Image 1: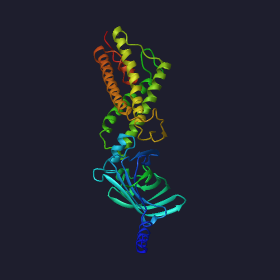
Image 2: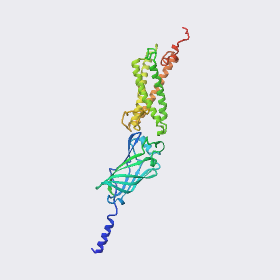
Image 3: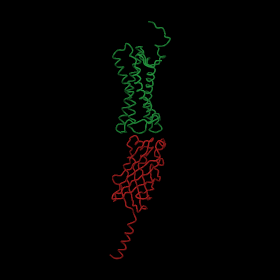
Length: 184
Length: 196
């Protein structure tokens, strides 16, 4: 190997190695849930068909990014009456807005394996900042355990007759567990 | 005034309970049939809450009424009533009591099974749920509640028709003994002389 070739190879390696975080896609075992209250009684919902793409490296937070597609048609709270209302015009209005989306490019370390993503949730045609805090468990199949608080009225979810926060609080607790596999 | 029932007449307590329950059954029925057509919005949930609160009240009243009947007794059938009519009347009354209890109870069960909202009796206290929420059983209980109601209404119609038959065609006291005394012509303090 000539000195020149060695130099080029080293330069290429130096350029390629530190630049980008690892790419992941969502694997089986992932879940996205939300919890709220009606007149003080807790109910929970699932959004089964969400899909996550993540580029993440704890050492490369600046180049990390998260993109979650959240189709709302399958949202379910285990009660047909409530689900009809949830999918209807007063809440998710899925006929007009079939999918929500969460994207984040700003990541902060909160110490240990805890991180925060300051991202944007687009829901019911409204885009607003929402922070996702999560723990990152590295491995062959890394796991993200995250929580976020979504103010439903910021997005017009449950407006009109349902806007009364004594009936349904403004803050909806969202939890997610995403199991990742390396993107091919 | 005698509060209890005599062999000839219903006393004021039984009369009050009887007519209160008539009002509740008819009122609950009308509201129940109308409320399901209202938009499913918190703006109208007070109608459901009133229906449920009055329905629970009906359960309390029918229990009270049966207990009072045990204490105070019941008038005998008017003299001259054929035996088969007595039997039919007894069965009808038993079914009326049973359904007046079962219709609101099935409504309470339906409320519990649907598991949507807490139930507060006239906003005062939280009413316990009778069953865990069930998406499979809730519609069954909904239909049961409605069909029991229609069965009750059919029986009420038979019961009222029998009372009017006695009053209009047999000219006996079967109907008037369930009415306050001043409306009962037979006990008017200044009776019109009758020709015998």
